[in-house]
Length: 488
Image 1 (spheres, rainbow, N blue to C red):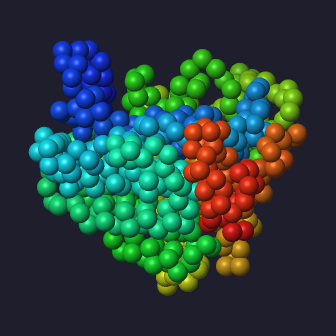
Image 2: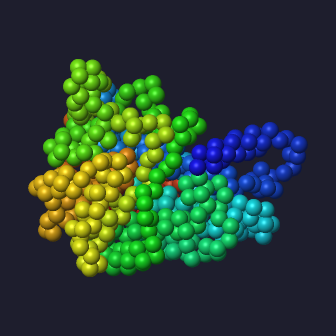
Image 3: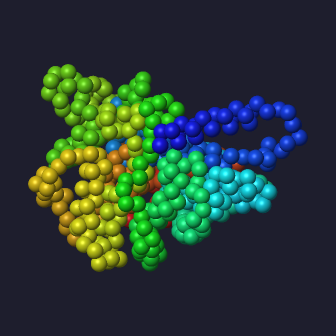
């Protein structure tokens, strides 16, 4: 895996230098190169899951830490404006100009009769198109979950002269993505797998499971907005086959693809686990505490290791870095520590919800228990049945059919540590646990944001599209206007 990723990174550098250094033929249209390495474009797009991703907290958005901060897993120690929601307006253009544009290019190069033969050296044309469609769907779902209506059906068509695309409703985007994911899997042709793929190694069966897992996750997300569609898509996705082990982004022990938490702590110590998260883990005797957090520096120096969380959203914090717990040095912020894309905990919690809603005849409690165990396994927690039973049998943890949504909301919030945007998104859906409203909040609504506000560029550069977006949103462009699936 390391060799594949290192070669891909080298290819990116060579591709960049070659493109910038060849001035022999100024008559060549730079927008329509004779040969383009689709392998490089795919690698570049896959890196946006990890190096510039939603699930960690180093991203292409204007403020790239808001996922775990808004989920209240992480708090700033000194500069707390983000904890008080100053950065609720964030730009999304880099996603359209970056990975989404690259993936669209992969599709076009594998479709165009003039380029498809050359492109096929990086895998069969059909398989490359399928992988690009799946990854595009992954990014589009994340974007619409953050903002609501987004450019979709007219997006990425600059080559066709569409520079101010219209917006689509979130409902329409979800419907289109379900179709896109199903069609992408169906078009896989059994030919050569895709090259430049350092996550799945070109295994198209793994790509199919990735697509079905995205669909499964999308289905439970829209359950309160369109349960008929949600149930149908969920059952189809499970039948088609979802992931069977944790899907992790593989970081390397070197600077060109290192864990983003490691980067953030290279020269600074700005972030600590929140007091709420640490206290909850301690109160229930949850063994994940020692995997999520390090003991405070002062307590280690004193010979009595202790875990202490940072109070969230203080206007004028007084706590010092040695007095609070940073993310764990081995499991979270080591240079090569992997971070989750999708996990078996998510799969089992989705199965538990489906059973609780009556979509399946499975035992919701069995899947709920399996979800907790899967999360413990993800974080290499060693335990026996007696230890698990002692944790599970506590009030607030053990299954109660009448409180299934609160229990799943809480356990998902715990298990999605390290998947910041997903944790915040699931909190918005379940409205549980009860998070803390900061002192003197800076958000326009004065509360915890339930969506991101469109960037100023959206209105300035595409005013007609922006007006359309507001009509589809069904409310003002504020942080308290709920997206389509957020019905509670």
